[in-house]
Length: 516
Image (cartoon, rainbow, N blue to C red; front, side, top):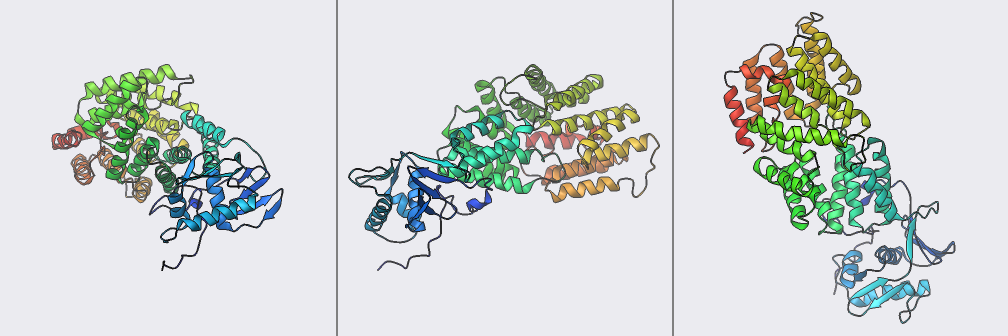
């Protein structure tokens, strides 16, 4: 006697995403597609079958089985897969599936001996042999693979103005190709980039991060051998604070597809120290003109105190960024001029540093996904370099512009208050740094604890509480998980005064040890 059958609920036309993964409703669909073949049409919203506009008498479960076969058009779907998907945890015989397929054929007017739509492959399973296609409810019949390709090209441009186009294309692709893992991986990347546009602000878009992670998990569930699914999942898990899990996923991606430089970039992003450097070496070997690899490696060298090597990496990256400006180079670059400027400022070459920041600001006006982030970074860094030269008015202009473009930016808020103090526009009082306190609270609520600590240390530097600033940084490095936390300390103009902290050597030694 077999166990009682569970109530049937419509499943999605894709591989089971596994435990802990939300239903497909978590991925917003902007259209309601139908599946068309011959005179027939399947509406996945209700799992109804119609022929020439008239409803065909077939149960929703059988319509969904038919839809599942159609979604895998041309590919064999095994009996075990169908039984597991539509009768999970139920001990039934193959006869149940055989009867179900017979009922589907009857509704279609199909024949097992001369199939038009559903073909039986003895001892293997079934294959849909009709010409199926998906379209929106309006009847628009654009090829979903074309939508996927449009989304991919829009993503690789890193053009902020095309990001919504990419998201829409991939959202359509996953609905119309619900078993196509690359479509889910593309959607995860698109959502990830939307999240990334908020990563420099006080408030992160956690909902978009969750959507991206859900899509990435679906990609991995649909095709466990697709490296891109694991690569983007690794990136997203690390962004969510699940660093060991993210590293494991990224390593799996590189193991599956060792010749894909994109996977090595994701691995480099989620790892630190020597493993990151090995990943960036591999990226440069596979894609020499990919400047972000130089940024990843330069960060490690900065943390180690190897500023000469950091400058070398940043300079080469900045050259690539300059050479690729205004071209159709895939995956254009941002941030390398800013990074080189940081190193120059730490070496005391302030004029050169300011030139780098100016170049970053100019380069960032092209609508790059990361453009606003690095424009803000460059304006803030320039402002603190100018403060060190007692140029309060010029510094104030940079901080004010940064806040205009990125309201409540914590570093810019701190810098503006410091410029006002320097110009005697403000006097130190209990509420002088109240705007900074509010910005730090937002950082903490958003989970950006390291950045909040850096800003707090910067505030102490401005108030000449240098020892306290050093204590804050030391405590932050002690508590932070393994990774790049605090890498910027040796070159951060906001923290330049920390070089006078009695325990500075210990802080830098701890930072270098973390990057070993």
